[in-house]
Structures are given as C-alpha cells and as structure tokens.
Image 1 (cartoon, rainbow, N blue to C red):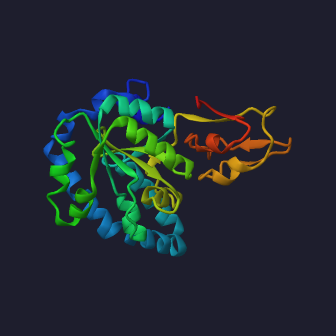
Image 2 (image 1 turned 60 degrees about the horizontal axis):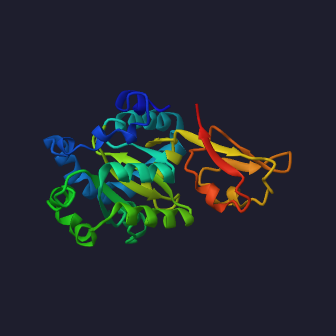
Image 3 (image 1 turned 60 degrees about the vertical axis):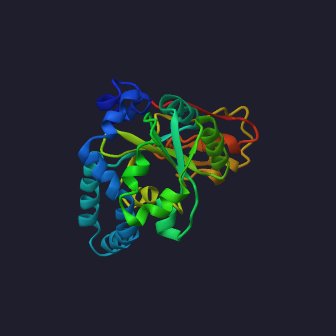
Length: 268
C-alpha cells in the first residue's frame, strides 16, 4: 500500500476517494496559481532538467542521486502520481463525471508532438474549472484550443485503445491531495517516466502486480516485449518470470497475452 493510501485514502486506494477530486480543492488560491503556471513551467524547463540530471549523474553521481531523492520527496507535496490499471481508470471516471481531453504537454515538450493523451478530471460542471485557470497564460492557449469535453465512457474507450499501443495509465495530483488528471504514458513521451528512470521518482507503482498462470503460459514473450518497466523475463521453467520490484501493476501486458495467462493480484 502506498503512503498516499494511508494519508489520503483511509487505508484504501487514495485515488478512489471522491474527496480528492472536490471542487473546493480546485478553488484553493495557491492551487489555482500552481495549475496556472504548471504547463508553461514544463515547456520551459522540463527537457532542460533532464540534460542537467544526465550531466550530474555522469560527473557527480552520488551527489546527484541524493538531490534527486530529496526532490522526489518534495514533489509528493505538489505533483505526484500513481500507476493504475484500466479497471481503476473506469472507477475514477465514475467518480468525477467531468472529463476533458487535451494534448500531452510532455510529448509537446520532448518531441513537439501534439497528441491528445491527457484527460483533466473534476466534479465541477463549469467546463471543468481548468479551462479558465489554464487560459490565464498565453503559452497554454494552443492546449486550451485543442481541449475537448468528452463523456467518461468515451474517455475510457479511448484510453483502452492507448493501452493497446503500450501506454500505461497514471493519476496525478496538483498540490496533493487534489487529483486533476489521468495521463497515458510511455517511455519516450512522458517526462515523469524519464525523471523516474533517472532516480527522481514521480509516481508510485500500482497497488497490484502481475501474476502468471504458468499452466496457461506459452512463453511466447509478447508480455516481455510490451512491459515498459522490464519487469517480465523468460523464466527457467518455460514460462514468464515477474520481478516484483520492477512490476508497476499497469496491467498492459494482459492485453498482449494471447493465452490470457496474466492477471493482476493485490501487491500486499
């Protein structure tokens, strides 16, 4: 169980606690300012900090690691996430009811690619509340122009297709504990995954992990190929081995398995 489940979920999955999506949280003045500056900040500094981290790990690795670990703890207070499986994506969408799709700022920053892979969430009925806040900065106007309100059912169907492409689903806070978005991430286009792979963890693994039904497994390797965390490998018994330390419980390997030999089980 991740620490947010204890702090913000009463011992259950914190992202299924409706209080963490409340409009009253969105209307906090400090949070509004954070959201207003969020996307311009990523576009201006996100890619540059990756280069700084790479240089630091090359020349002063131990110091860089300590700085990244400290920064990771600080980020838990402002912008942090968790991997969730598709089933929980549906449960989150049932809670919020209000969804807007917009281009991913990470992909825009890293690859100058406009791809609608992010979904803003809130229970607010007034255009999600985000549109007015984000629109205060000139840099975000292209994103606002591409923003489109969609039904929860449509959002879920679209994210299922993104999962088929190998993307994982993550929920994110905007000044914890307010959850404002579900993002669909891969290793190439997600700044959160880039930072985490370099030692500045920005999201928790999911509450579940993959279990292999060895009798059904044909060891075809489809799951090994699609796993974004290198958690699956060929075992010594002619099937697949799961590294519990690496498995983030995203569940996308299940869709790649032709034998239906994979399932999620509670991590604890």
